[in-house]
Image (tube, rainbow, N blue to C red; front, side, top):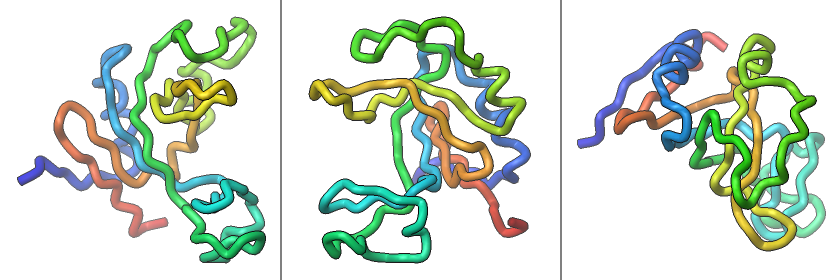
Length: 138
């Protein structure tokens, strides 16, 4: 049986703060723009659709990723120029920044920097515990 805990969304940052830099976590969150699993196109205006208006393929409305926090200068990702927003600044604005192990790059490699809105997180697995976010009060 998997170790699970149901938490309120207000507890997400407390869980994230227990993760050491470079440690792997999984995150499932709502996509900003639904993405077609067939043609790969995405559009924010498709939120109310179940199928792609371009090709008829199913639309994915959530995203799963293997993430790491505090990763700097990863081999496959472009080097941050240092002028951007820090992870702590993003948290204060309601976003979580991470290195996404699943992000596909145009050159065929995988891994790049990404972010998601904290209020869109549905599940996280941290140190073997799956945290399911209670979103009943949304």
